[in-house]
Image 1 (cartoon, rainbow, N blue to C red):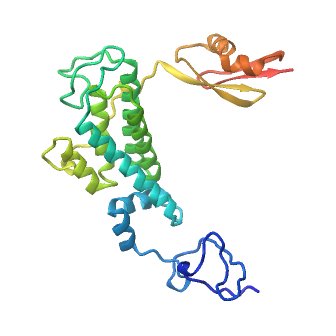
Image 2: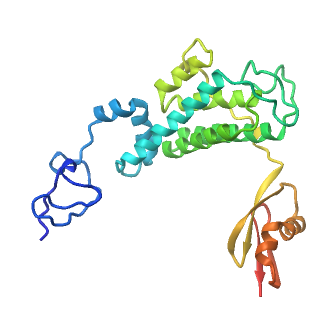
Length: 287
């Protein structure tokens, strides 16, 4: 029978929730925190285990302001791992091992985070261009999230994307990479103030990160010479290919037809019609 009785989590096996006295199966669900329901979370315990910055990041990431926040220990762990990944990226940057130059004519050691000095435009390699685009997309998106409806959860997601771009970067000895590290710390500062300040000092800055100006988007960095084109067959997405951003409808169809992806999925099929949505997708209608 349904009794409405609540049990302390410490008394229940989460893998097999049963009444410890009767053995009856228990229902597990989210409810508003309450002492009587034994589902409260002690913030001091969370901070002792993960640190105050992890707790802040989880709360800001878990839900937008207009929605209820459902506490989830797995997501707390996720933010803990993210901050540890950022810490590793910055500490490795601060004490880099000898690395070969980037492909495409990269520069020597980087004294600053600015990829162009004295107002002169430097020619960047493809890896640097891609990384700078990721950096300035992050600045743009995080700034808009903070200035608009306070969508902190999507702002944190953008910082995660930037950390992934830095982790995968092929130009770790370039000024663009240094710019990315600096930018990530600056964007992180309002969300994770203690760790961000430590990392800011770690890379050689004497003043606090919280006295710095907010990074500004470079519109030229957002311009891309390639776009991601979705390939569909009968309206079902089969994958994506990279094509020149200036390609017209005829060229897009040609790129799609000649791609290994399309050839693989169209083999033995008769193409009846090709639908091209410029800048987005090519859809093959087959018999």
